[in-house]
Length: 412
Ligand SMILES: Cc1cc2nc3c(=O)[nH]c(=O)nc-3n(C[C@H](O)[C@H](O)[C@H](O)COP(=O)(O)O)c2cc1C
Image 1 (cartoon, rainbow, N blue to C red):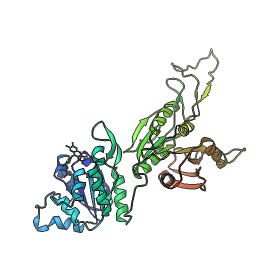
Image 2 (cartoon, rainbow, N blue to C red):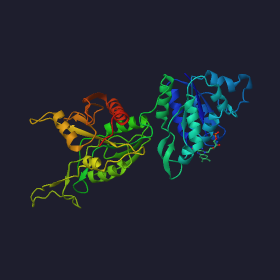
Image 3 (cartoon, helix red, strand yellow):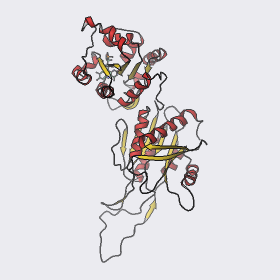
């Protein structure tokens, strides 16, 4: 596929090098057209080297090739990232002062804008009107992500992650002209990994959680367009790029971080394996092995029920919709009841909206790359099974969450 990649003059231009890589590694032929302003941020040599094609931003270079007509005409897809406020305005009003804006007027295939700018610029009535004009003409304009902007400030206006732009571009080409990322504009808090409860300066009580499922969920939520707040306990894998990470160790720390991150989130996913109990006392010094005293006895006390507290504090995201809370249950059946019976009782007791149930044994789930779950819903829908790699399971969970958010009646 022939792709024209327009690059606007914003700080986020550097991230577009990764987007270009995604396109070329997928086998596409990419011509980059950087605006004059963007070359103050990233030089043309980067684009020439990564794309393998010559780069120009003037209609007067290689005039016999009539690039100002040819590039747009031949492109199967035009992507503009970062789309500056200026470029959105120029495209909406049909200006053609440089090679990129000429190409936009000549484009025969789909066009995708991935905006990035300060929140005030994005929310300004002029930009809103320009975006509406472009969308009304059938041009796709992604919602920017929320989060840290160029300075210390944060809010909507961040360039969506390269993978998000790539996925949206591919969906557009496959004819999904109404493609909307299902969690665009939503904030999702995800807890992941296993807590560690200290006994003394060197020992702790932990669990087998690797964090892989939580990471896969964060990637799926991010790729669905969400801003992800990721509360990470101990994990064997690094947190994914493009999410806000808060590191914690103990259940009490995780409780505090999760309640804070949940505030203003549209969705909270409690996938961390949180210790039910912690040692009643933490020794300041290493507990010694001594022949003259009895072996130590560890007394445990209950940790707070974070899922229950989240349900009690439940509040909505920026859109004002009620918050959707998703619990995870790692259950084993016993002589008293099966896994699903325990999970169903837990769903009712905790009052969360969805419960993702794992059947665990020492060789199942923890640390593995695949998983098999049942998603129970308080809305009364049939239990839904999902199995495969943790990525596939996460995609199923995130699409179920998107469905509940967008189609199921308000939660209490
Ligand atoms: C440090 C810096 C960062 C900027 N970041 C952005 C940005 O993220 N989004 C934006 O719309 N404009 C941003 N601007 C302003 C644009 O560079 C300016 O509007 C320019 O005229 C855009 O030209 P272009 O649309 O042809 O690339 C930034 C300017 C500077 C100096």
